[in-house]
Amino acid sequence: MTLTQPTATQSTEAYIADLRTHLAPITLSEREDILREITAHIRDSAEAGTPIDTILARLGTPAQLAAEYRDGQLIRAASRSLSPIILLRATLRVATKGITGVLVCLLGFIGYVTGISLLLTGILKPFFPSHVGIFNDSPNTFGDPRHDTLGQVVILITLVLVSGAIVLILTTVAIRAFLRLSQKVQRSL
Image 1: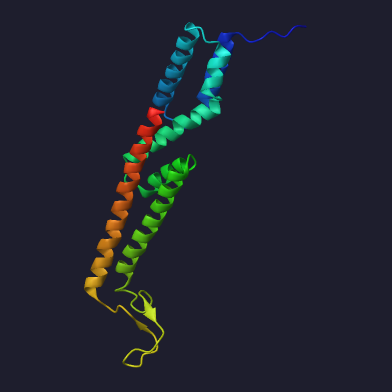
Image 2: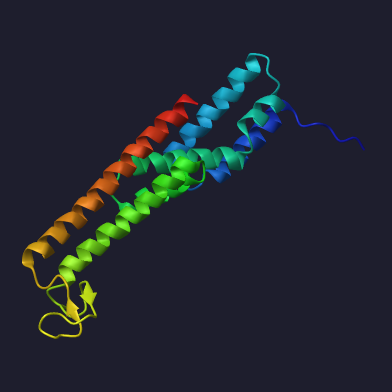
């Protein structure tokens, strides 16, 4: 019994079927666009004389190629989003590709945590004055052993709220700008 090598058509069909499976999380219309694009690329390269095995090897495994498309879709969506969760997911994905992505992801996380902390401090201070603030254990001029260094200053609370919101907005704008830049760099490669 002789085993035959798969034909170029069989190899291409198997590759596309496997790619379709790995692209399942992507919407149907986008998935079909990607599959048409890859099929056309394989056909055009084969017509130019490149062996099918070489073409498929250059594309990478279907799992790798699908991951690249999913990453690109996540980064595109995040670059238009205002959701911190989507933005942080995208920066985590970019962080796997280089040190710049790691730094942006870290700064984004720190920025969001700082902004949320400042907002919560400003909101909770009027309701829990003895638990929210910066407390000093050394006696103050009145002999109180534990006192809030900042006190109940409405202006301070307002500044904390505003600064928290500003930190959140700046973090979001910075991450979106980085993701757009990341897309441009990836397209140029």
